[in-house]
Image 1 (cartoon, one colour):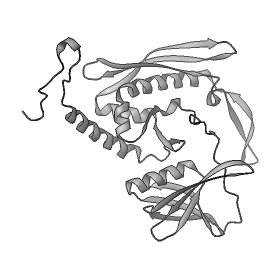
Image 2 (cartoon, helix red, strand yellow):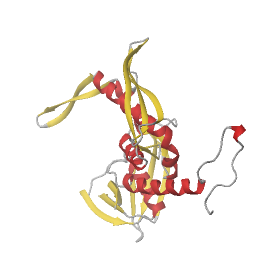
Image 3 (cartoon, one colour):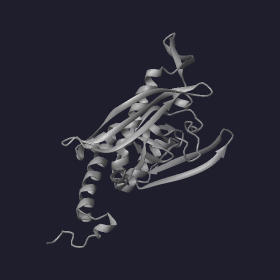
Image 4 (cartoon, one colour):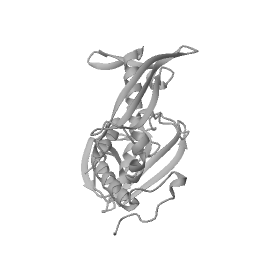
Length: 276
């Protein structure tokens, strides 16, 4: 019968193909397309070093297609030499209708991480938000993040192959620091500002014809600038990696973008960019 597996690996080897690979891949591509449709509409995607990563809720969306969900099975407080402390969590991913576990994972969130040690403290002074110091990140937030990471990782362990088919990186966004490729996680250096002819800017929608990437080094360190060209020959620039990556994604998918820009002399600087 068409589509059936006729030849299988002898039982003595212990492994056998039990489902038509073409059918498995066809279903996976359907799930990947549906996932990409949802993720592409996110207003604030997680993009690091030019690559997009999925957050826990994105993994949950994909898991729902397969009737899979995740739950925390254990959370414990941990301490290490040097005053390092935080939480370790364990989680499982299971098939909802049957309750059968299909994956498991564990993860930590510790106070030796840049984002989970201290955070800026702000106060309003004379109507303005002013940084007044640093505060320690509360332990309950470390506990919550450890649980989130463990659940997301459990889903990742069984569904990463579908995420890759959708064109995303298979790592969990909550576990990324932003400098895995040796690049700085600091915000990109902004273009020197001149007197703006239109401080609030304008908005235009188009399918990018060209997205150029130019790198250089100035007094403040290295920089990367993205140039986005519209079909009518207009160029728009940005030093923001998120905007640059979205523009590249739109060009590859032949999708329109909504560009908010400021006119700065002869330059049109992107201040907002979203998929149309």
